[in-house]
Image: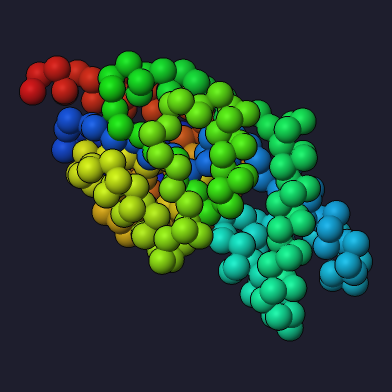
Length: 248
């Protein structure tokens, strides 16, 4: 599955029909199924301020994007706390994740059009899994809040693989457990590290610009970009895929 793209967002021509039929769809969770980054940002900002990080100056959105968003917790530990021992920094991350889960129960919402896309996938009987760097407790909570516990056949956790994203291991594991071919799979991702992981696994990646700028995401070489799951570009590509599949 490949795409002709001018890499300029609204004018790109998007296609998923080079290697039909589509059989499998994989999703990241944070920022892809739900706009959870603001909740993570809030939790980090509050907890980092409490310990006097950055002289007590709250982290801004750009700092969050550059150093935290899409990364595995152990990698975040090395970035934020290079002088701490790993046990201490991981304890901070555990406390932060607990705060995130409290916020998620109150405020987590799906990305626009998500359930419409999930219905389209379900009606066609495609295999599906969620593939995330989030801790399992977070991942299962978010999927449950979104009403997708029965939709996903598997939830693959980066920290339970040999290497997390941006390495391809979590996506390769998803393909293995689903007995799926990368040539008949697409991935939805919102972060540079996630797109890189999918591309490295040999799977076309549709990038979603929930929070990250288009020019930054394009550097990771997604197949094309969409604003959300109501984006006409996505539905044009899916309708074209349907037409092509019926001919074969």
